[in-house]
Length: 241
Image 1 (spheres, one colour):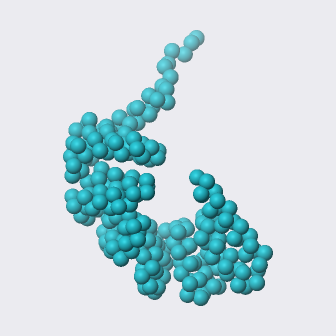
Image 2 (image 1 turned 120 degrees about the vertical axis):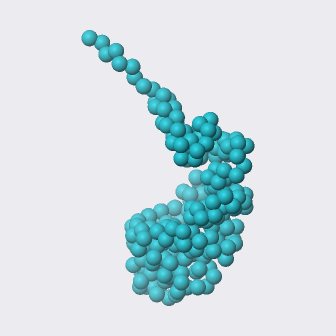
Image 3 (image 1 turned 60 degrees about the horizontal axis):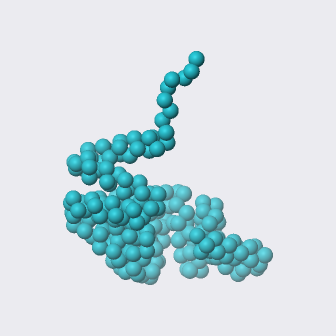
């Protein structure tokens, strides 16, 4: 007896998933299905790293509605991801004009401003993101980094500790906290924190560098050299990709 059931191809599955996503977008944003289909395709391409194709589709969406905040924010994030934070900030500010209380928009604006070296403005953006969503560990960690750059070390320390409380596996917060403790001369605590950062993320070159510095100062030269070698290997791999 032969099996008469038809097999569904991966392409068909993908098309169905995309169609379902388009219906969800249309329903949630109260927009035409044709516009929602473009948004769904753009978001999928964006997630896959196909930035040029996604940007073109986001542009089509904005032809429908130049003030569509979610798409403006997504396009801003895309610009940040492709090395154009100035354009990213412009698009995200346009998104905030329509939705001034969207915490993720303020967070993304802070990321763009950080890349532009506008640290005071970035700190303000991260602070606003936290006012709107106090549970955002990434915003808390990034705010701490901006505060440290401004020389507000006690406030930065508190921000990093809060980020870790919000997300005990936030390797970036451990890395930043360890670097701050090392800068303050607290090598013993810095070592403990940096070791935890590396347990969570073994590919953190800066934490390997800082841990190596601590080990070298304590006379553990062999271990220090291994830390520096690890950092160099990670950076070489990142540069190659």
